[in-house]
Length: 538
Image (cartoon, rainbow, N blue to C red; front, side, top):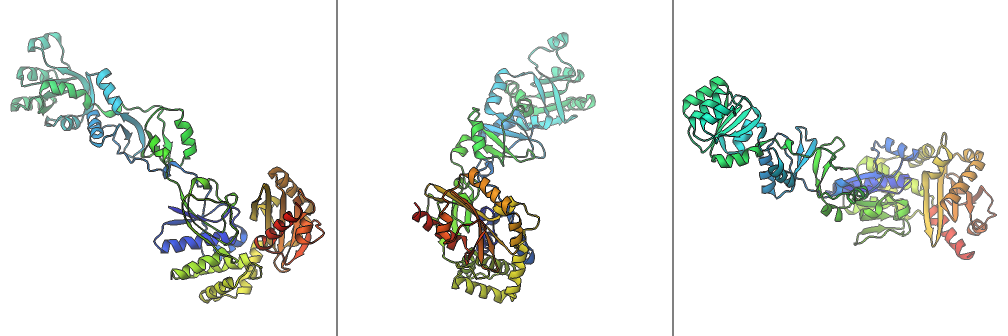
């Protein structure tokens, strides 16, 4: 699965770019999911509802999880399978461990080759609890009389004379008797109502003993192996649940992060660890081998190319492609990737042209959100970042939609710029970006609104908040741009370590709340002015 997403504090262009690019990739036989890195704003919500497009999935991080690993899909067994069945399965598939699961595939325990070996050395060789059908299967036998499905009792190898067995009272109702073609002992065992008689050597048992077994309700089976071999194998016909480990099993949920798993593995010496779902369903087995060479989540970035603006854990992911219209950032890759960076007003414009290049028809809802993305990022084509390429894209997209663009844009801006009921931190972080300039950190928030009065009614609260963010984040400059769409300019609220910076950058007195005409673009106007001013006042 390939994740496509824009930057943190998503704006309309980043959200619709992710949705539209995912749609395009999937049309080209890809398997992608559009995502967002935070709550969508009111403008974007208005657009998605208007064009009936689903919200993208919220993506918290792209850290490597257990489910990203190519863990081994080792087969599992049922607790009522036998030890011998487990051994043969492990031998055939060259396995050292088998998970034991219930009928709903929920993990019950583990059995290892070591457990089987220790059972042969230290186990109770006289105790047996298993299904008759399993004994028949494991010992290549045949049912002669079957009264019970399951047998539980003590194993006795009939090596004594008939009189010794009788005089010593060795056989009873709990006995499981292993015997050859010694009919006197078979007859006596039936009279004792033993649990089971296993006749060895593939000998034909006369029908009278079979009939007696039926009458006395004694289970009888015949096997091909001799008495010695059967006596060695019979206790391995026990249920595997009798030796499986079911306490303090170290297992990992598929959603756990690799970093957390590594820490736990460093404290344990086991070789194999089960992987389970949230409801404990077994998925597979991981080993240290899988963790040393993990798979990474695959991602495509749109509308950004800086680590500080991207998803948590991005350094752990495999970046396949970047589609952006901002300056080059600090993201690095270990292999070549598709990196499309065009000087246009909107990432949506670039993606529209990708549709054209691939000759993919644009559905009406995708055309609508692409048009909205361009309108949003270029302020209805009034931003200085706007290019003829953006204008042409809007024109072509509207041939699909036939919208009154002016009216639609005003409704969109009105829905998106209302600050009613929003807290100061919510407004500030709605579209906040961090930039690293040498050893200095600059944080710039931008709010597009038609409700300027609401901001200035809370001017002192905004300044106090900006001051806290500035000090806590150790920024060189913390700036809030309040952009008036109709007046085509921005008001400035800020905190800066160099008091003259704002004066020099915007050729103004630098008063709090000062209006700067024709400054509406953080990327095209504000950042270049700040960079230039920082060079001047070094």
